Structures are given as structure tokens and as C-alpha cells.
Length: 353
Image (cartoon, rainbow, N blue to C red):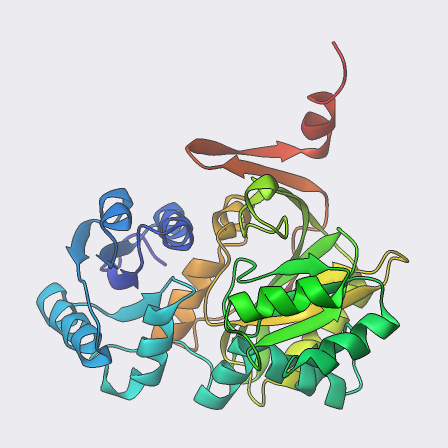
């Protein structure tokens, strides 16, 4: 965006959440934006780095839509972006036609299919793509059948993020008790347990075409001891990398789940112990919490997202396919400033004195 142009005003919902903060920091790095924040928790409201901040406690979808439209009118908002991974995003996606400013979201059917991990698995399976052996757990027989094929299985809620409801189990008794405790019959999937290595494809799409993407590998979860599954949704360390076959598989996964990829659509992979990467979910409509990492490396996806939403002609002449191919590391934690490191810096810091 030209420095001489008028700044574009973006309303970021959940602006003080980790995903919102990274989005805002990326726009600040690009310049040319005025960011307004709307938060629904007191903690996020006070943590927000938006130029102007608004707070809302809501129960009905209409309350959220009314407040968003009021802010759009009073602040001169050009674009609405929901940074959260929960109910605000889903509510605004459902109400997109009633919003007074544009959004950049997948089509409703594609969005709901990606949010539902069982529907995602079915789409991948129907397309003949590799995916973990998975069942929807309607009763104990489903657990028994899967445990006959695998010594340990992975349970998780079919909706949600950050490892919602996830746990590994090696017995039918533990698995059944976990699902019963969460009132989860018919709402949980069970899958073969995979390895610890994970990777992520972040993709920005417009009208079915890939505009930009980047692969990252997660090296660790932060605070794994605080959850039953070891998955917290908070990455401790990660790095950029390039794998042409994994990129192609990610693109195929998105196209299998989405009839028309539009806006943000990424893919999470977990590797089997033999090194085979398997897609575990296709993430719709929001950037991951470490998107500022890529902006610092020159791939500013939030800036490109806003430019596409406001003017589809303002797009790269050709897709930006994994422009950062060397290892670059991003180390972060709660209450700590993240660090961007080269491979040598990352490895030298680990060497004994």
C-alpha cells in the first residue's frame, strides 16, 4: 500500500487475542492501516494493540452484528476481520450478508465443512487422499473397532481448535469414559495415534486460486504438561521450510474440502512414525497465531489479505508459493517477546559453552 494513500480502516474482532495481536502487528509492519478492535473478554480488551478499542459482552448473534455495524458506521471501517477461532467468527460468517462492511470468507458450505473435522475427513477420504484411520464415535463399538486396528487412538472434538477435547487412549474403558465425561457421543472422532512431528500450510486464496502460501514446521508445543493430550495450541518453537510434495498435498487437501477456496484456508499435518505426513484438519477463515513470523520474513499475509478483500486486482502477478524456503526460526511464549533466529543462531544457542 502506498504511504501517500489514505489509510484503510480495519475492524479486528478478538483484537487482543494472540491471533488478533499477530494480525495487527503484521498490518503495522506494512503501514497504511488504521486498526479498530472489538473484544469480548476483558483480558483481550486490555491487551489489544488496536488504535481504538471497543468491548462487547453478547449472547445473541444479532447483538454482535448490531455492534459491529455500529462501529463500522462510527469509525468508517472498510473491512471486518474476525481473528478468533470460536463463536465470533462463526457468528459473523453466518451473518456476512448483514454486515455493513465487507469480509473475505469462504463460502458458507465450505466454511462449515472445514470447521467440522469429521466432514473434513470424509471429504479427504472421498477424494482418495491419505488421512489418518478415523471414525466418528457414536458408541463403544466404534472405539472397540478402531482399537482392534491400532494400539492407541486419538480422541478429539469434531469442532474447535487448540486441541479441544483431545486425549490419547489405549483402552476402550479410558476412551469411553473420556467421551462420556464430555457428553461427546456423536461429537468426537477417534483416529490412529500418529507421531510427534507436525507441519502447517498457510494459504491465502481468491475465487478458487492460490495467491500465497508458506510451510512451517512446529518444533514444540508450549506448556504440554498442562493438558491431558500434550497439545495446547500454543507453539513454542517453529521454523519455515520447503517440501514440494507436501505443498502439493496441501493444495489437493484444500481443493478436496472446498468447492471454491476463498480467503484463508490452511492445512495441519501430523506425520506417522515412518515419516508419512497426513492431514489432520483444514483450517478456515483465520490466520494462525504466528502469522507475524512470516510478515517479519517478508511474506505479510495479513496485508495481502486486506488488499485482496478491498481490491481483488491488487494481487501478485503470480502466486507466492513458499517464498521463505530456508530454515528461519520463531521462538515464543506467553509474556515473552518472540525471537526470530537464523538456523545458525538457533543451533549455536543450544551448543554447550
